[in-house]
Amino acid sequence: MATKKYTVTLPEELAEAIRAEVGPGGFSRYVTQAIERQRERERLHEAVRWWESEYGEITEAELAEVEAEHRDLERQHAERTGTHQAAEQPYEQKRDAA
Image 1 (cartoon, one colour):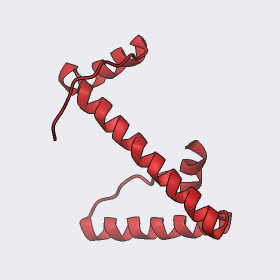
Image 2 (tube, rainbow, N blue to C red; image 1 turned 60 degrees about the vertical axis):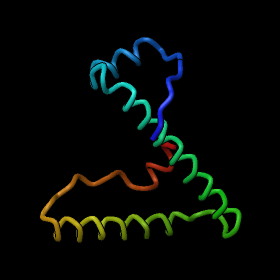
Image 3 (cartoon, rainbow, N blue to C red; image 1 turned 180 degrees about the horizontal axis):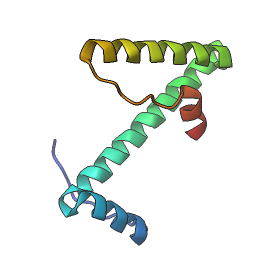
């Protein structure tokens, strides 16, 4: 992927905290990944808005069902791979945080 240098203004304290964590060579990668995640979240929010406009608001019961399915898939994956990952926060909490 081609790259181009841009100038952005960030709060100094935030930028220095990130640089301290990732080192000077990792700063651009960190910012790029953060922007990519934000764009993904925006596309997902757009998809949810479309879905809800077509089919109505997602109910708590539907969220609970998805959470249960997700936990089951995570358990199956852990069993197959022999890994035990920490449980992610429920979709409801992620949705509220967004």
